[in-house]
Every structure is written in structure tokens, then in C-alpha cells.
Amino acid sequence: MVVVAAAAALLAGGCGGQSNSGSTATGTGGAAEKVTVEWWNISTTEPLKSFWVKKVKEYQDAHPNVTIKNVPIENEAFKAKLTTVTQSGKTPDLFTTWGGGVLKQQIDAGLVKDLSSEAATWIADFTPAALQAYQFDQKTYGIPHDIGMVGFWYNKELFEKAGITTPPATWTEFLDAVKKLKAAGVTPIALAGKEKWPGHYYWAYLAMRIAGLDALKQAAVDDDFTKPDFIAAGQKLKELVDLQPFQKGFLGAGYGTSDGQAAAMGNGKAAMELMGQWAPSVQSDVGKGLGDKLGFFPFPAVEGGKGSISDAFGGGGGYSVGVNAPPAALDFLKFISSKEIHKQEVETGAVLPVLKGEEGVVKDPNLSVVAKQLASATGFQLYLDQAYPPAVGQEVNDSVAALIAGSKTPEQVSQAITETAKSE
Image (tube, rainbow, N blue to C red; front, side):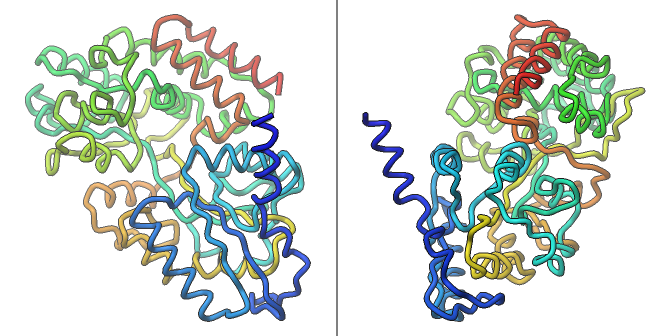
């Protein structure tokens, strides 16, 4: 009964913006009568929390008949709350999206506005990599405001101790580096085995490098992950696991805990971690941080593979517009997506550029490296637990974690993901 009551409360109060969809407003966002736009976002921490409060005020001062109801919600709570309201056939007027499989389900349910025509003039300002997660059948259903990529963060001092002069560019070189680090008495890799999602990065990147991006896209269509290249991705990962490269107790380790993956890196207890652009800040939050000793290199190429080392894997955040939202919602989205506002957002250090030619705005040297890698990326793959339907993404995480733990074979991983995909 408590659950039913809570759900009813969410449905009653969660989407106030939709109730205003009958208000008349001009196409430029200047309302002919008062209108409220409800904006759900995940900017619950600084600096973005205060940043958006200021930008909302700026917009409202210029549009006195428009009220932007700014609703910041913590990440996991946001996902749960949005799931509840979308299952009832509703959405907020404007809301955070990560694109991929979840957004596709919302599109198929007729809940999200196609922005291709109305936003055509300003969509052209975004980098192709940033837009990709929000585009389906050559139509655009979301506008990015952040992007990032996963790569190897490494301790230059520990590499030097092991006699590694340059970051590995191929999988063979990477395995050799792991062996050299172990021989020097250094833990090669920190991994949050308990949380599963960090482990899926390895299988996903190996699938990209061996099978190529087109194969991952095709797998979303034919629901088949049993092809030889996907099995090979598991076999390559098992090669790494067999070297026992991870820190002691990694299967029970969290990511951002005081004894977890990021802390092991930040305190100089491991030489590498495969993680997104947020890694340096988390390393400093839960550990000492490495400062100038921290470096970054892309996931290595796999000899004979169909993918390129310049293909990036990652994700970001964007915003979608509810299909019944008032025109002011799109106008506000255009405002916060403008070059001027987005440059200011990047300058806070909280996000990376999604607009063309903004790489130079990034001042943090670590983030600057990532921004430049993304700007020159030849292809982009969204996190698999976002790119595919939620159940499939969860199976990827679970099965890869089982492979790393030694309880599943590469073939069993591919079969389990395929079975889940075909059942969806």
C-alpha cells in the first residue's frame, strides 16, 4: 500500500509541466499567457546546481510570462522517478537523458518530441560524437550538454618504476605492460569488481576493437552476440584476467569508497584504471590524487581487429523534450544550449565540450587530453548498459562480472547476453 501511495503521489505531482501543455505560447518561447516548464535534471551538486539557478533566472527575466520549474534530482532517484512517470505515459516538459536504449523506448512509446526540424539550425553546431546517442533513424530526439570517454588513467611514476617508457598502443603491448608492472611489485590495475559496471568497459572496448562499431550496432538489431568476434572479446579479456592484474580483494571493492578502485589509484596503490573523464576528481576526493604523475591513454588497438584505436567509448548527458511540452520548453533548451551558455558551463569544469571548436575552453590538463581525443574521434559507442535496452545492459554487466570472477566462459557470456536480448 505504501508503494502504491508513493507511486500515486509521483504521478499526481511529478509532471506539472505537462498540465500546462494547453497554454498558448509563441514559437520563440515568448508566452502569450503565463506558462510553466517543468525541467527535471541531475545537477544536484556544485558547480552546476548554482550555475543553473542563475541561468533559469536570466531566462525568466527575459521571458516574464514563462516560469522554469527547476527540479534537480539525484541520479539514481531520477532514474526511478522518470521510469515511474513514463510508465504512466507521461514525461516532464524537459528532462535529462543519456540517450541509447532507454531513450529509444521512450520514443517508441510516443513520449519524446522529434527535434530534427525545429532545432535544425542549432543542432548543426554540435559535434557528431556528442549527438550520436540521441539520434535514431536520422532524427534527433535529444540535445547533448556533456560528453566524455573512457580510457586508461595511469601513474607515470609506477610505469617508470616498471621500465615502461611509453603507454601501450596494442593489446599485446598492454599485456606486456601488465607483466612488467607485476614483476616490479606493482599492482597493475584497480577494479571495482563489486559494482560490475566498471568491468563491462573492458569487454565493450574489446568488442569495439575486434568486431568494430558496426557489429555492435547490428547486434542491437539482430540480438546476436554469439558471433566469433564477440566471443573473441571475452577470450581477450580472459587473457588479462588470467594474469591476475587486479588489486587484492577487487571482487568486493566499490568504485568511490575509501578502499575502492578510485582510492587505489589516487593513493598510488595501483598503476592503472579504466575509467571515464571524472576519474581524476574522484581519485582526489577519496584519495590523495596523483597531480602531475597522472596520465591518460586510449584503450589499445587489437591486432587484426576491425575497430580503430581512435574510436571512443563513453557517454554524456543531454536533454529531451516531452511530446506535449509547451513551445517555451524548446526555447529554454535552445537558450541553455547556446554557444555562450555552454562555454560558461564548460568553464565551470563540470562538463566537456559538445559544440564544435570548444576544446580550447577546457583548462584542466587531464580533461583537456580527453576533450582532444573526443574531438578527433573517428567513431563513438555509448556505454553498452545505456546503448541497449536496460535488461540487456544489465546482462552485459552481470555476465562480464562473472567472466572476470571466473564463473563464466567467454562463450557463456555471449550466449547469456544473446538470450536476454532475444527475450526483450
